[in-house]
Image 1 (cartoon, rainbow, N blue to C red):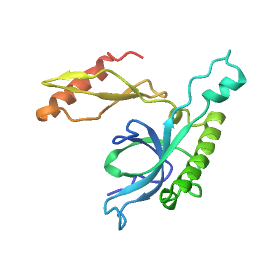
Image 2: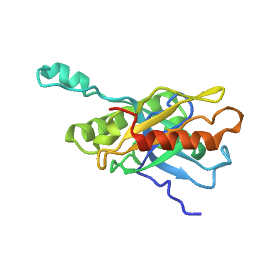
Image 3: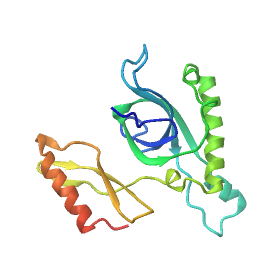
Image 4: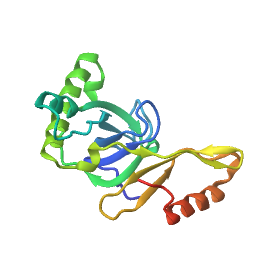
Length: 190
């Protein structure tokens, strides 16, 4: 199988505390390790996205709105959704597996990551990475609700849907048709 989850690949975390957050792969372990016998990777992601800045904001307020909070975590491949984007930020020296062993090292690694992310944000590169994923309302499905998360693609004005939880009682084909119809009819308004 082709290994496409490589370092610097932008991904979306699907499970856990940071579900729905964007992250970048720092290091991947395709064959697993002694502690984790499954394929996983070390990711650095955005815990709190920068806010929207407007022209009348003061310099102090602009600086405050441009802050980024980040996280560092080992994540199973099953809990990631890869995107087509890559992020050219060199985090290998700042974020390591050893940094997760103690609280002090983890805090220092998060600070270094935060500085690099903020510098990247202020230069205006990788704009997609620093915007929140926007969610729509749940779609009623036979005896259950199906939450859908979508992201707006700046290049070609299309909506990409991601089913985050399978519907109840194995109605997958029905859900696939519903999602397809929504995307075709462009009911989702931005």
